[in-house]
Length: 320
Image (cartoon, rainbow, N blue to C red; front, side, top):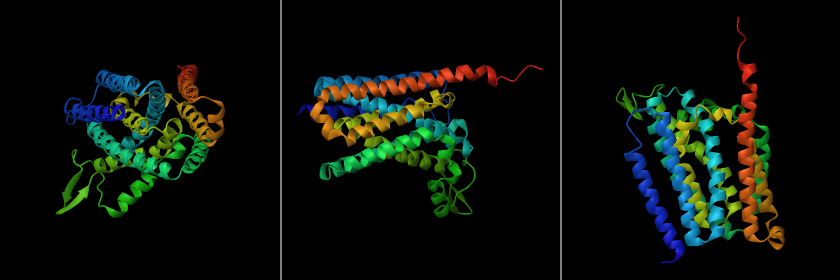
């Protein structure tokens, strides 16, 4: 077996075991997940993702490993940004907290399947039509600029989304969770609960985010292994990260701006790749990309925390 085949095999085994562990050990039916449990589960997924990077380094070499870490960090940052939208979806449809875990598990599982499909299509298109990379580059620059100037509230309202409109048009929906069921029977006919709607919307929203993230990863690396593994490892821990950060994610107000700067950088890098490759060594490019991604994400998070702390006194109502 080649080093690449061994890496794929290990990745497949780890992925299957991770899903089984998440389903069997970390999923308790209709149970709320404590902050402590969410923290340690998140640590588990992050350590697993980072450890796989070490394995990639051993099997594929330094450059592939650094590309993996750059892509993983990018995808993880985008997944944190996803959580704000997930919170809006659960709130909009009035889902009880005890059902969050099940809905998120199915949503993430569907997201993994869709990501694999999207990545495969994207890789095939790029292999056949290299010029598509320039389209991706322009798209990332446009998306980054648009994201920098927009807010979450402007971007998304669950009840006004096209996905919800589609479901409402073609399926008989009921305005309740059916006691934790996805499909119930009313007057002898099947009807779909708000829990079913939420699962579909979670998966659909991840597809929307994948439209940004997959071209961005391709701007970091052309290695299929890096693209697949960084994407999937980043979203594997999305459920536990949701429970850990759902109360604090709104405090990362400027994370979106940090991500948008990264998207613009990667887009420009894709557009100027021909000239950059003539002047800058590939390994140095990877180091620069990793450094800029780490800098933008960390600065945006620290600035968000700083601004929130600075604003606390003015948010406290005066004593009467």
